[in-house]
Picture 1: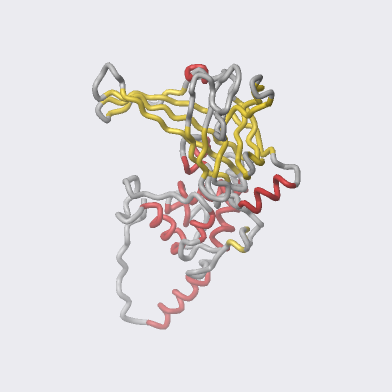
Picture 2: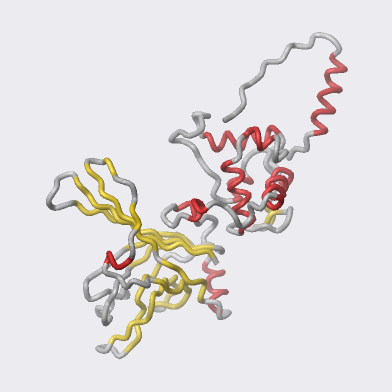
Length: 316
């Protein structure tokens, strides 16, 4: 909460002395210039910190959650820097915990705040390091269903090809996450997580996230396993294949076939049971996130819907 504005008496005498007090106070408060930037060539100029690193996550966590009083007190930020950080968080209505609140999801967004430059960034980073915030950001920042959990600029096609061409196509392993809830006339119950077999997928739906050629194009592939198609005498990918490397990802499908098949000319591998799920997401230099949301009407009860989310979130 922003502290109240305190009115100050007007000094009608000793203007030179008042000016000297102001000069001393301003000199004591180290502050960035209005448009000073702390990002140089994609890295901070106070330690080479990059987007999606553990240090970046810690800095953003502090910028998003620290009170005005602690930003200026415990962390030592200049009042103008803290004031503008809180102003961005509070949104247009200048009030915390309302619908227009915002949060910083990238260092670039924080860098764009007036009077937040190398000095402010260094104080945030130093506090994070001194107080073991680095690598210990609360798990809510790693919610696989929250699009803000994987932030930063999308991995460029050039970077993707560089990784793939140098034998680093396998980015990481992953575990799929599922949640479900019931909604009645717009009022929804809390989300409930449940094991994968409830969707008739294999219980150990884990796999690898990799980059590679698929139907002649560079794709992101979240592969659970290879499935041998006896009719085609070939190993096919079971998982999801994504278009949009370098931009926003659009992917399908996922299933549990006992055998695999692919329609002629169809690049999508489907399960025998017809399971077909579309994902949207992002791939950055440090993480991948894919999210699918589905809603089904209850055929027996009007106004009742079942919502299911499926997600993959992995840092690498």
